[in-house]
Length: 266
Image (cartoon, rainbow, N blue to C red; front, side, top):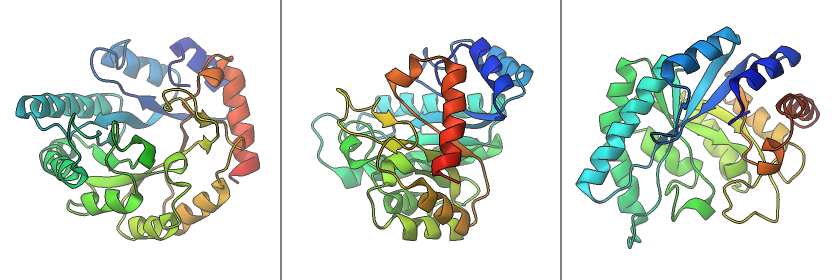
């Protein structure tokens, strides 16, 4: 339902047995276009609980002034998460700075930023969830490509402050994912679990290529079994970036998502 008019979200909620949603976050001025207070009121009026705010991050800049701006934006994202009463802010680390080939150095800058942001978030009742993205995004969007890399960062901090996101779209290909899910669960670090299918061919720009559940290659039941075996009992989010789905009636898509979840994830 990302991008839908709040009225559509309210109607869809009334017609489907769902009471929680994740909320999309974009850098200022595009995020929460209705304003923080109005967004919080609309969600409350609709009876919706926000499971996470997505996203913060993009913390790999080499230029000190640019990194300072990124930290300020992330503090605002933490404040927004608290305002809409979610305890989880999803972080996408950011890609390589222009001209850089130093993946390790970029990840270390993410760690340095987390050292500043984690205490700030904890003071406001918000935990940070590092999301590894598929390696095709490593150059421009996310230098954290595997759950192991995300955990290597998260484990430098208390579990109640920094954890990870298990997103099937980004992790379905990795045969080490089940072991890393178990590792994350043992440390209490699974802060979010997200579902979307992998479909090909990918569209131009790649980002909006996620598929409806059941349309692609992901074994959702195995992922759900793994996260539950690891002790996760929190919300399961369906996060599909797909223009064709966005162009359809929101209530219809929501009902389809619920049906597909029952068919492919239960």
